[in-house]
Image (tube, rainbow, N blue to C red; front, side, top):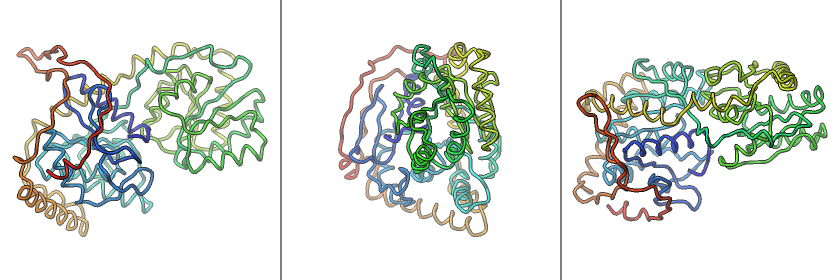
Length: 452
């Protein structure tokens, strides 16, 4: 996963914590440029980079069935029990859940985004989501707003949807009071420069904020199609000496950028959670953000100044934050310890583990019951969904005939903790680690997987 973002970070952190708790976890994604095959990351996390064609923003071309042979092979090789998909716009995620259900495995889905209901793109996405989630065992959302959105979009029973927020490794986002300038207020923006991230609002607000507050400077990190609009704005208003554009930064460099500022500005138009807000607060920044989506659920009110997603209100909210910082009314030095106590990936892993335990004890459904679920997805869409499932089931029969499970070699597991067992009193047996954490990068060729 070379496209580092909120979803990718979530998957990596969750996977490593689940491995720490004694589970075997692998990640399946598409290849990135020269990165393909199989690699081991820190803690023995195994990543399969499948050579699939990418069409837009690191999303693969939807093929529905062509992913099934190699996906089945990987699941059998690794002895997988649960398939956990992430992100509504990932075609690999939707296909993996479909194929896993056809193979009789348990499935779970985590939604990280908010979508509308009226535009063509949202309608198609929602119909695809309804197809996938019609036969999923459980759904996880990163905020209560995201849960409400997903339940409405996919027509789900709210009882089968849990809310488990993102988290942050607070130790990686420690404040540094000596890094920020003493002579002026610095506002930091770290975001992908797309329309939905509020870049147009940023372009309109920065000149007005700079005019109202001559001692304010900006640091902007990120890349995207809207970067050209920011550059044109700087040239038009001659703000090159007050606005520094860093371009894309690696996730491990985010903290070093954040600690240079006093205020973090987040003008997003839609957001299911906003992990970057937690990271900014952990670094000791006062957060100015729009009141949209799940953002109001992320941080307590004393850490944030909220704004409507409008230019005038964003300028006003930022001005209030600047005044609060100048007058010393905000005790940002206490933010780090407060965030550390609120968000933990260990807690996220424990709650996700309880979801896994719940779906493993549920009743298994047969093919006819699955077809009934899909048929109820719409007059025309239901029939198309049923056809897809029938074809998928026939492909599985063909694969079982051509490549029986007995002929597929089992992959060796990375040395890790013994599985956590529950004793009679309900306590967990925390066994000692059988192997040490070793950071290694192992290249393998997928030809062997294809041959099997």
